Image 1 (cartoon, rainbow, N blue to C red):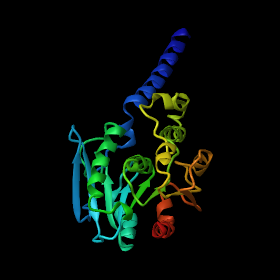
Image 2: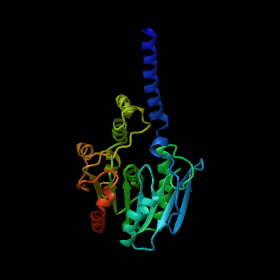
Image 3: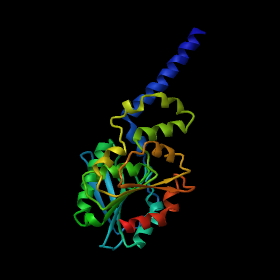
Length: 270
């Protein structure tokens, strides 16, 4: 009996130790998994940016417009072909030049995201180059899911005319907790001190404080189980420059497609 109890105790300890190790040191591999590009993309141009380890940020340019620009940051699973047919196509028809970002290891970009900080440095380099040709006063930034948090921190040092956020979590730790609780085999890990284990707990409030003069529009589905509307509302301490649009029956996978007409209407006002 004692041996069985010892084995159980060792298994439990190993389970939580492994979980703590992955959260504290290996999280980027799970936040930005490898995504293989399976079909040819339709961009006009590609731009490639590298860090010191040859990890590559791939930026695709769409559309001929020189009047206004959109910088699009997808979620953790990339999906450039899906977005070419939806968001990118809709903004092109709306007379936007679109720049879509593919993170290292995803959709044809080489390497792997090592840290969020390194990724944000790469994105900062890319944005500086883009904003040399696109007027910041006529540039909109659009971030979806995890890409919404990435977009907010990327914009921090760059002036733009407006920001669209779609299906966003109030913080990285809250998003991770929701993910763990959504899977029975990971649910016990939610008792770990997630905030303390993360190298940095990226929070929506932090960049929003630095962007008080920038109009920010948040589109959140009321049926979103991955980044629930209730979580966002519970942590809603944002300024008058931030507007929340609740998308009726919107789920995490389709809020953007259900709300695309309203998103374009908001963009027109920006």
